[in-house]
Image 1 (tube, rainbow, N blue to C red):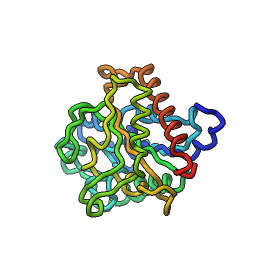
Image 2: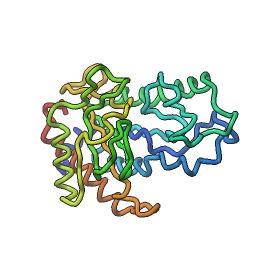
Image 3: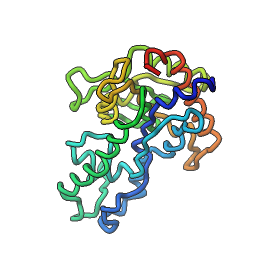
Image 4: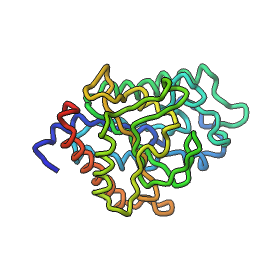
Length: 267
């Protein structure tokens, strides 16, 4: 990638809301159910490494260190049971009689959820990549199952969004990035655009993205990316080389997207 454009990449901000594995210190460990190993499947494993491009692009990033099992910063803050769930897919987070009170949940949202989004809002940026992982066969809120290796999205339509849903990037941006990904990774990797998760509410998209060119009230063009874990996890073991190939391909693709759309995005 062209080194004389390195300063421009400081305007890219990467959000990784679901890579964390920690439990907030305010939650008593004795209140947790015995299902924590099963619940750990909800972690976007190793995305804090997969989308860390700082050595390559010099960009900024926000990483949430706590597991979405305990607090999900990508849900609407008014939906307390989604932000601080009692159970996930029927699996209890807490022991019987040890569920958190509504006031306790509100406190966690104020302390952790609000801080995460304040960090994104306060970053210097002209574009956001919201990075996640997924697995084959997982169904989104609309019942659509994951078939692609990589999913890029620039829209969502959920009950929390305005009528007709929202767009989070200008026309053509998603397609340019997807084309560059396909070029870098080869024909064996299936890249889909808006194929899954458009029916699943994401507060990062809703709060920080828009489909205009210039930043507006802290909002900038934003793309959500879901990367299938089978590309870099073999069995249950991280394939470090495969992750590194992906990470560098993502960085190059972002850099070429910037080069093609830079003037329009005010880079």
